[in-house]
Length: 125
Image (cartoon, rainbow, N blue to C red; front, side, top):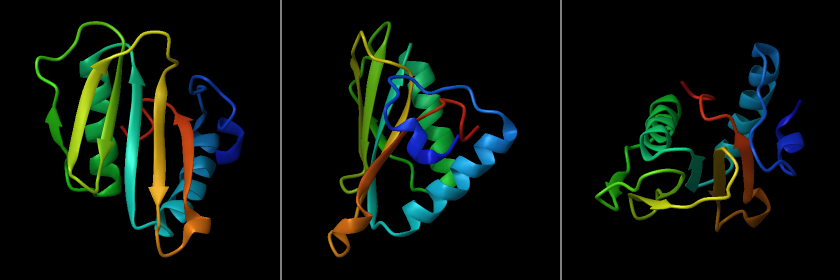
């Protein structure tokens, strides 16, 4: 399993340690070519989505995003975070898969821009 193998999936697959290492190494190289990021987290609860976001921020040493959208919705959610404006919003959303999507933005290098995932919700834990 490599990073590009995730692209057609609706939900993130379970990855063993070797696969996680390969995917994280490829992701790290691609992230390095970008200037800022948006992140989407598809989860079965707001708490799960926020936990995945905070783990990702710690692992990638991103400044934590300010969370909006209170009160948090019940049930399945989509969390959308934007480094450029420093905010994240959680909304109720059913019918999605589960996982983390990261989009890299690089106005000075458009060829580097892409979306990666879905990555497992515990990928950065």
